[in-house]
Image (cartoon, rainbow, N blue to C red):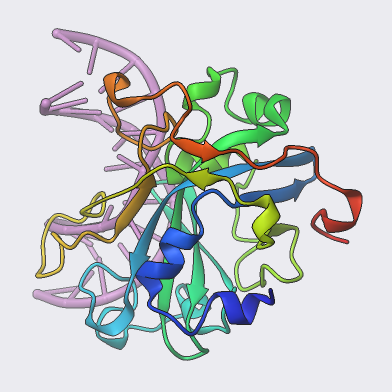
Length: 223
DNA sequence: TTAGCGATCAGT
DNA sequence: CTGATCGCTAAC
């Protein structure tokens, strides 16, 4: 499926849920890294007081949100880099924040980028995730998943199936009319979902069915 | 569970 | 300059 079709034509909350279980891959200078997406958040643009494009706010920093579907939006918070994917048509500034993955590919590279931290702490948060990827600048900003070293595999064969999708209020949104809306989505029981207690982990990591881990060379990013 | 740290930008 | 922010870490 083409990126512009996947990232348009349905509510952003639905796109955010459909991304769960899909492989997020980055061909980094140090090697391929990636894993299955386990946590996302939807940001609904002008009307959403938690969104960077609230009330139509637009600047050089958040220009990517206004780009065509699949545009990568990198922003910095407290010295860490985080990533949204712009969804809906160009000029409609909605986005999906990638908050966590279950690490699958390039464990050694990610461990090194995270200074030897245990695998459970590698990618369970948006800042940690892109730190593990080795992203320390905004070089990927304004690129598109369709032709960037960062990509998401959209083929259904590559999507792991969550047993149950959980939802909650978005993390770090403390005020405003929409702070309580359940626009955070996650794979219930997966240990790489941020801020989940150990007792809620399940042995199957929340997957009804895991997709394959062997990636054919022709679908790797950058090809 | 909570306080420092910390970089950037919008608003005074 | 000040405050707030789509977090992380080490400490209690």
